[in-house]
Length: 183
Image 1: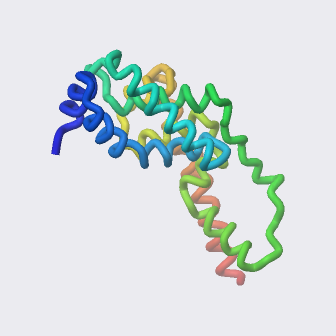
Image 2: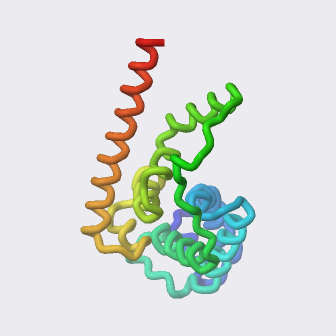
């Protein structure tokens, strides 16, 4: 199996099969990332297609001193912004309370999901930073470059976001525990 560096070098020389292998390696990861920024699955698929078309077109400009994933995510973010298909902030207060017991169960289980909680609480950029750090295992430096933010912003945002999520999730656990004690 070829390394990422070998695939990039071959793609720069015009190898379609090497570029196809890069697409295979990143397609699912980009899909999950863009799903948090686009309104529908169709919009995600369009953004992914645009991302890979642009990456193929400009692979010659890729500088190997930076991580390929950073370069690719940067292109994806630009495509998502260009298409202005951003996800609207979720307003927990405006969502109706489910009356169906099954629906109430689903809503309760969603509250337990860390990423759904993060999406609800954090700004789009803060959520993206958290996703890139913990779901994609990017370095702070690569996250800053991908989002076009200073490293200091990235470090502070990650710290504040972790703190906010921790506070929210511990509050939910306390509420659930007290509900069980009285239920």
